[in-house]
Image (cartoon, rainbow, N blue to C red; front, side, top):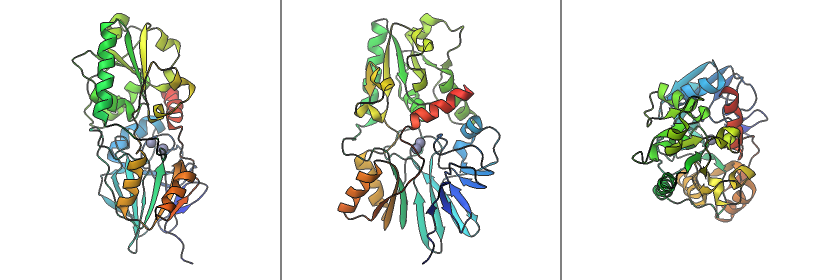
Length: 341
Ligand SMILES: [Zn+2]
Ligand SMILES: [Zn+2]
């Protein structure tokens, strides 16, 4: 039997012909990285390949790694196998990886969302024979509202807090959610202040040439009363800490796809939950998978068992695979963020 072009190993997704891995979780020689989130970009590989816009965040998170970066649509060849990155619409710099050999195409989605968030390059569907997809939110209960509607709610909540002398703390993870929040705030209401973990990631993106709205890092000398009139963007790890408590009285809002259901303790503590995700919802996943025209789909993380069963009933050839990419990405990322903060 012919060896498949990509296989699932205990180190990650592997291309034997090209001798490289995609998002490996154990140290390897040659790693192609879909995006800089901690469950996809691990430390310890000899060589990394990623999109240009992942460069500074990867350096910030992983230190001085040996990194090559390329543009979307640019193809490089590894041992005769073609590797091309396409936009995944997940966070700035996120990519799907297409691997082609002898006319056979495989695509690894990494994480993706189909809605254009106005901040990262929008998702593009890539035709392929085999599609390796995430399905973090692969349950019918997950159905996102257009982000404009969510940000109208966020901005009116902020305005209301200012009028009632409440500080406003909005929580989202530092790469992706934080920039999406920042770029959609109504800056006529006030200024944007950031926790160090958020500011470090924004700074890395700015070094990479990304233009973001102005932010001010909160430092011990910051004027607390001024900060309380603005909005504070903070990471999940800051919830319930003395750092956050010093802005009392405040209203605390949490932005996450998980707000659609009863969530973890930190999220339950929120005064307001905003359902906002950087992953595709149920309909988004199905339309994205369908658009590839693939013969087979492999599901890496999320509700893989029930979602693959469902896909099989509607005529796809779907398989569940085991990886270390995690639904608890938010927690992972912030743990990683804390170390460098
Ligand atoms: Zn991710
Ligand atoms: Zn992930």
